[in-house]
Length: 316
Length: 316
Image (cartoon, rainbow over all chains, first blue to last red; front, side):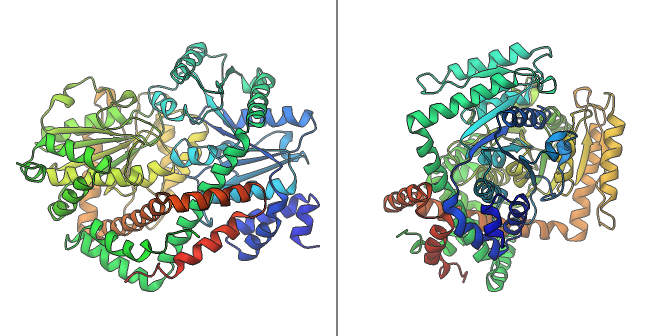
């Protein structure tokens, strides 16, 4: 039986294998995914982000366990764009010393920065499709970092969970300000710590700025390590899912994602077409020398080069 | 006197004005920068990154003050790709309650995610050129977040300073692993805290993996708020500068940066050319609907669209 058949028959190892193939830019892997794409679209995708030390991994594990009790199958993708590790390698605190990794109904995968077609965002998106075809009910995408590319990854999920934590210092204010718009549900983890209710209040206050929205993100207190508040948090995630389903927001969100995915893939392809061409490589290096020596400025170089593409960027 | 003349005459307000113009995609601003580009290339650019709460802002201020004592002029660009604030707005802990902001020899600027031509990386790069032309000796680029785009920004600097801090939890391990390659100098800030020497040892151990490098990144203990160890840290930064200058690494690094900047700008231009075209907008939305309904898969869409560009990506 080939990988495609095995994947459709819910073979976990086939899913792992196909993700690796796609990560390694194997054209055969991409072809298989392309052919099977029509079988995707059933899994619900939850993004989990927040600052380092917020306890995202532990919380993800608890949410997964809660869903396992309801008989759901789960995939967890741990994304760390700053890590060189990928595939089989286990990221930082991702050494899950618990029963999840031996549970047949749970698929766990780490994604690092190395060896991806396009960016890590594209690789993650391909892994989501493969796990969707494989047949899990929920896919959790957990990001380890907290920068723009992590936000780009989770904002393409159906529901985005922002995990905050009390007392992480001033920088957190800036993080909060930037991520307010992408959080559909907020968790204040380690809520048994001093300052938890203050953190929750600060989040609520920031949410107050955004009046007249169809969905007001709930803010939930949890202590992930103690499994406190996890069920209520899961209810909030499900409430957001129901909201999207009942308002047509789900369709719309997925269409926007598909659009930005296509644009991203085209950009990546163009970059590769430019860089994988030895003639271009030489020309670019020559330009770079002239830019550094101030014979040319980068804007003029880009203008000249861009004229080549201008006529080609009209979509049929 | 027009902005260009004023900028060449070291007019601080002209620099601020031109950065705003370029941030707001004002074609006139870009034209001015393009014309003045040959006047750039003199400032030395130091990138400062590290996890939230590491005390990057305080340390940046202290380094700037140390250089001011030597009579150097400084610019500080605080970059937060996740913040919607930009320009005049002050980011998170960037409310610098000190004498730096009233010092004529210091230029401070916050860069958020909003209203940039291209990405924030491109806007930051334009601001660096403007401040270089304006005539500062050193430009510090401080990133608030710690994700891929922040790393992309600082890795294009001449020297990159990684600021670590004791006891930030497990996620930090993953951060460290990913950023080892971009750090030219390491600072363990808040070194009066428990675990500081352990953190330094961990960094040294990771650096040990990378034998036979021409430059072994030094690891310095600092207590930025007490101004302890700042002079020694500055010496390490200068030692790295001397190393780059004496080995030809400086030229090479700047050429690589120029190359990747050109490629990035072309990608951004292509994206805009695609998205700013109403015909394309309609076509893309139609494609997105078909992708979500599984009539088409995104890979086929990209393949079809990409055929348009393939012939155009050969650089002359």
